[in-house]
Length: 346
Ligand code: ADP
Ligand code: MG
Image 1 (spheres, rainbow, N blue to C red):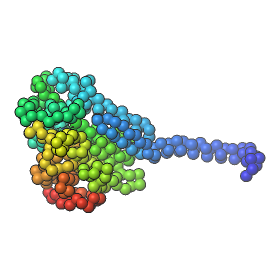
Image 2 (cartoon, rainbow, N blue to C red):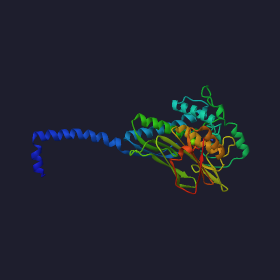
Image 3 (cartoon, rainbow, N blue to C red):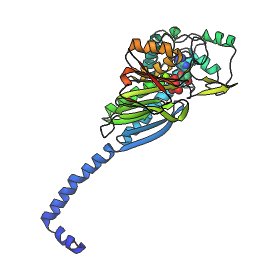
Image 4 (cartoon, rainbow, N blue to C red):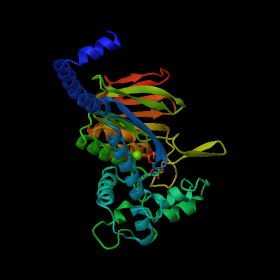
C-alpha cells in the first residue's frame, strides 16, 4: 500500500475507529507483558561476598530484592560499627530490629540442634586467626584456650537486659545468607514473582521453576578446582547452601587454615571434608547445617544426616569421595568422575 493510499483509507471514519481501538487494546497489553515476563539481573557485593540475582519480573522487583539484602547486611554485619550485631558486641546489649532478634533466636536453636558444632559466639576465635582483618596468623594453643572461655552460645540470653556476658561476641556469618535467602523468597512471593534464581555467594535460592517449566540446575563447585563444577543438582523451590574450605583461607608452612572453626578446639576444621552442600526449603537451617556438618567431619556428619532425615546433602572430601543423601540420587548428576559416590541412607 502506498503512503497516499494509506492516507486515503485512514480517512474513512470506520477504519479510523477500528485502527484506534486496535491500538488502545494492544498498547496496554505490551506495557503489562514486557516487564513481567523478561529477565532482570544484578550483580552486587554484600555480606562480604559477590552475589548474582536473576529474576523473571520487573526492575522494581529486582530493586526491592537488592534493597532487602543491603538492609539485612546493615543489621547482621559484625564489622559495620552501627549494625545491630556490632552494637550488641560493643555494649553487651542493644535495641535491635525484629529480623535480628528472629535470626538470633533461630540460630540459638540451631546451635543446640547441632550440639554446639555451630556456635554463633565464635567471633573472638575467628578474629584472632585474622579472618576479619585478613591479617592472618597461627595462634598458640594456650591463647586459643583462653579465648574459648568466651565462646559458648548457651551464655547468650535474648530475654534479659544483658544479651552477652563481658568479652563475648556474636558472629552471624554462618547463617546470615541462608536467612537472607528465606526473606527474599517471601519478598518474591509477596510481589507475585514466579521464577528467579538468586546466588548469594554459595547460598542459592532456586525459586519456582525456569520460565520454560524445567528445574533449575545448581552447580556444586569442585573444591579441588574451583573454576569447575563437580556435579549439578536439578531442583525447584529449594535453597542450596554450600560451605567450602576454598571460600576463605590462608596458608602457612604448606598447611591450609580455613574460615570454618571448630568451636570446641578453636582450630579451623581440618578433618578431610572440603565442602558440604545442604538442600531443603529452609535456607537458614541449610546454612547453619552446612557449617556445622563441615566441622563434625564425614563420619559424625553422616550419622547426623541419617538420623535427622529432614534435608538433603552432598559431602565432599579431599580424597575425592562424594557422600550423597538418597533424596538426591535422581536429581544429582556427577560431572567430575574422579569422585567416587556413596549414598547416605536414613
Ligand atoms: P561462607 O560464609 O563461606 O558461606 P559458612 O556459612 O560456613 O561459610 O560461614 C562461615 C563463617 O561463619 C565464618 O566466616 C565465621 O565468621 C563463622 N563461623 C566459622 N565457624 C563457625 C562455627 N563453627 N559456628 C558458627 N559460625 C562459624
Ligand atoms: Mg553456613
